[in-house]
Length: 128
Image 1 (cartoon, rainbow, N blue to C red):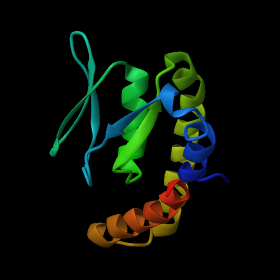
Image 2: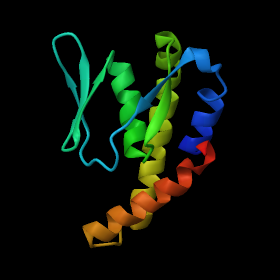
Image 3: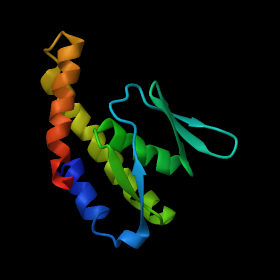
């Protein structure tokens, strides 16, 4: 199974830099929510708000925030973003399910969250 880091390297970092926008993400947030506003979308958490141009951009960035990225490139081509987003969301869902399966026996929430964060740190190493 492909990791999020591998997906990012293959589908995003392989594009010419002029077709990408670099976004600095919130670090270590919990409970990131996507909210629709009058003319924009926002990612909200206890650490602040990140404005997005579209729902797809918000969904894309949310995955990378939850995966532990501190910054990420996003394609400027909105059609390309829509095209790759389902694969990225499916990948994130499958990874979460695997992590949840293997940590289901951990009763302490802090330890469970720490293990999940460590696993995600390993998964994103492909982008470094």
